[in-house]
Image (cartoon, rainbow, N blue to C red; front, side):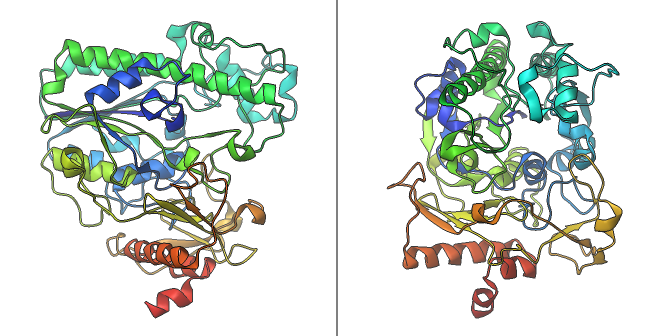
Length: 492
């Protein structure tokens, strides 16, 4: 058996034709839906990029115990487990966070890996001289943006784009190894993550009048731009989405050419979506996590079952990917994994959970049953207490500083740390309090989440799910205190 995971970053469900979008050019996503099972209730777990990848590797939630960071020494890692059980694992990626402090232990879990450089502000090409940055960038100009404009100077033709090279290297692996058995390939591109830069031919798919500032990278936070600028950046995103669609199509062509559908699982997924002005917000890390961010697409082809062109309504998450692949290859699933294999969901839509948690460390703890979304906010305006539990004290692009480490103490082991005591380090949260309000949404009556409801009975129902799932996750005691749920836990 063989398996391919094609993983995009920041892929918006609501902008794909299989999910009802009628204006983007993405025929290969439509083709994919015809060759696979489309999931209608796939939710994120831990946000954003690397926390989601820790969910992918470990099959359990990251966000209750720590913020952005590496794989921990006590973690299970799905590709490493496969590797140790005779399944060859290979990753090709241009996702620049893998070679930063906060993502530096993931790729070593595979047998082999290939990196493509140059996405976003990847510290790739060196330039002492200042790059040619459009004046309209203004206050947004910072070291990350500076490096991005240095990198752009080396991306002239379509063949130079990191996504293109990533897919080409992934397909090279397939062509080399398609006659062999027992391998897992992860093709992972940073696109359509911002900045939304695509070759002109994809931008030409979305003609529109625009004479404003250079704008393909919105700042995270409230929208302050004009409607013209908002529409323009949506078209820029759509152009990059169409580029993703084109290279997905090349992968599907290769699967057709080599008849891989007979013995190769295909998973096409993403870590999260992105707000493109909806709810008057840009991006993904600002609270609350509306469905534009939290409810991304998922497509799976399982050759053992052969179901295609069908949809599934069961509630599934990133934590299900690890057990799904382990079960597929006949490898024992570690007891620490919270996710479930999706074989029976793919076959007959048999549910694997009643409800699901999702969130970011220090933000809302969210819970959904597929019909409602409950966003539980901190009780205190100071959002305390909050701690990171880790043996790898790294942030996204830097190590924990001395001031942070001065707060460290050894905590008691958690159920998943294999008897090891992690460091307990005081955490922080920088978003403004009004963005952290408790809200409950009825998705059937209000699918766009514009009007929170006040229903004590439904809120109590969702709180019970939330607390149960937190307990199953062995959440730290202070998380219940932070959320004002400690008394509730004691009474259960």
